[in-house]
Length: 511
Image (cartoon, rainbow, N blue to C red; front, side):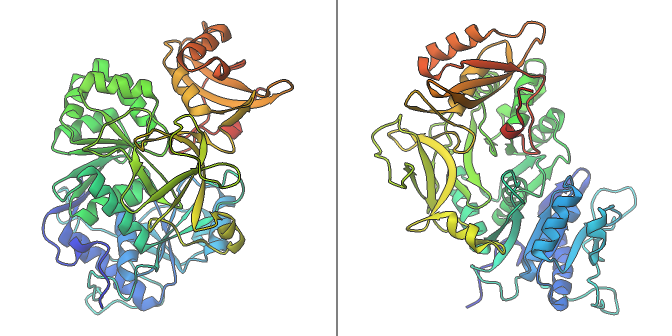
């Protein structure tokens, strides 16, 4: 039986818009032609896997789609990676070649690999758009006499369990691990999100997310293509770009909390932005928790609630607030179709579902999961509890109706103080409600009496007049509970964050 295509709209492509990056665009027919040509060459070359220098460009999207059509696993690479990290990834995954936008300069380690330039030529000088061709050459494979190879836009013999992407984790606790994502996981997650969000081919998505990560690449590029809709990529995020695209017919916005914070800050002085957001069908935030304060500011100015979802590289998407459900700020919604989710204690014993204050680790299982960490069988085995449950390392509570509230990471955000298990996330949300607090993070540190005490890291709105520890503690005690109040405060100019806007708590130091 012929496998179901991951991107069915490319099997019988039309002239409907597919991808736009800035003033350069591809229809489905053009994308099928360009990606299909490169896919044929990858297949003919016998490529085992290919790295993709994942700049926010059309060439990156074409390269990844070509690899999927060829049934060759793609390894998206962060253009901001250092030489040491790139060296580790290249040695670990041993790519046959690296796909690069024509003219792009790559680091020394990648320059040592066979390079495939993805070239998209303009139809007419000065006119937006690209021709439906790719002049990428795979080393050792000759093009046909007219410069082009056959390019049926359909996968070869790739099956549901075959790897589609190998995405490397951030490596905060050691060298990055290659997460092997099968085609089954991509299809399952994207179809589950379509169910939760009412996502159809009529939707036009806008975002400015990087393309080396699950959020920007799988959800943000492959998601629209699986539905037969279109993507408008901002290249670089800006509130002006969001207003322009949503005001010009886009229906959905994907972003991370840092982006939505900037939107919330800009709204009082940007009526066009407020109008554009008001007209959007769906606003989605992910990759980290969106502070409740920003939720409320956006809702107040636009009448639209931001939807949050929860996922990981290893699991893709696990939960989401549904488009037809209650947009409850501070939660990541309910499990997606096909996903089983439970909260467990330190012994992997499931917690009872009738205690909304019980903090446990999230474990999940379902067809959305990865298959393995590349070349790391011990790490793969350790990641799973008996019964095939994946240990996420994320701590959460669950409302009686199933809504999940994440309180932080087990390693950095679970504070055991005075016999209580305290999640850093809810304290951070409470601190951000104060006018004098611009950014907030919460950690724990050893305490001889309590075991651990709550520590607040505050970037004040006015560095000359930061909120006092007493004011912070009183607010948290009244808003949450006395045992959750901070006992220590450190003031910083700004919190360290990664490319996706997540706070790097291991980088916080009082020195």
